[in-house]
Image (tube, rainbow, N blue to C red):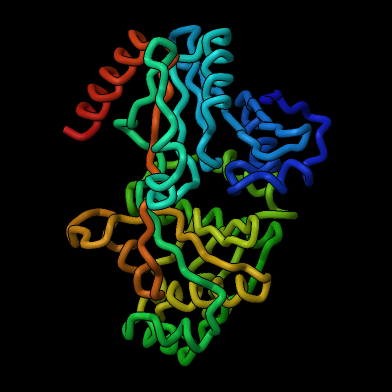
Length: 338
């Protein structure tokens, strides 16, 4: 049975079934504060809550239509997809983008692949041509000892960590307002430097204020009281995630970011974390000239494992408008990158 979850459900009960920070109750509340509609669904078996699905609903410009996004849940069952499709028909959705937190290897061997036949007379379920999450990530096993983790690193990474320590770089957890101010400054400096135009300051303020007590942690690397690098990390279900970071151009030779990541790993172990998901990556054997090669190589230096996720899919509610949407998306991409 599929039910819409109301706001009176205990968030702790909900989070026990959530699979990722973007499925957490706190993330949904943050999105609501941004003016985004949030739909929470529960999948029940024998009156017991088994899975949750948090979907954000976004207005499609200049129309009365909307687009929905289901990030990092378990892979929805046929019953869940049918419920979402019917809800979408009644609420003017064009399509629902679904990016499950499921590894590709698990997906290929699941009953989903062998037993699930999509009824084409009801809806289309297509591989998305423009995913929001990278198909690959890198994961570090934090059940290993610090000695094992250091041994498994690339020699250059291990050298840079020790160099930063020797030169006097110090890392502090600053999961408070002062830490957030440092994060904001270095994050937006980095965005400007790298010509990355992501979310604005108000977005990050809402995320921080919504997640800071339970999920979000801020770590800062200092040299003589000058902040050189900062991470905002998410902790959820014994997994650390690295969604946001920033650095200064000052004292680049001190390798503060290398020590910062190592101290993030050590903090994760202290908090009982089992794995560290680096959030996104190029595929193994990546092109060294790719714009993402730098941070992919940086993460790889810590002895991570490349993991391919199940991918991005679109549950199509209105096929004609969906085709028009994809055409507009392609034209926009061509215009922005020509």
